[in-house]
Length: 120
Image (cartoon, rainbow, N blue to C red):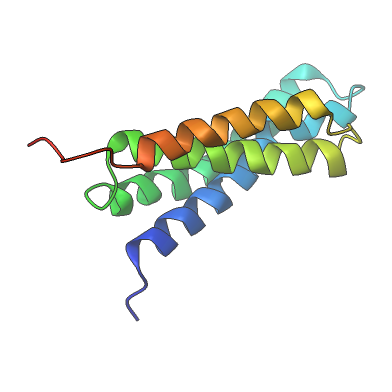
């Protein structure tokens, strides 16, 4: 089965960012856990992020530029983080966070939009 490159790339980036967000921020609810334990557990979780992130970039590069791949990764990362911080950490989505995220999405639009002829 041959899936479209954008679907595979974005799917892998979503999955990798789920692991990354859990590794980086999941421990914040467990303040009583020793820091060394948190670091080792987070490192173990982050291993799975790399198992997905590296293939996502490998498959996607060529269809997407490096700048586009990084932009996709950042938008996915921020989207997952907003949901994670709301659902797991109980933080509120405020107007300034939403507006800032909107500006980042506008930046993504600029990176993906072609203005005029493409230079070779």
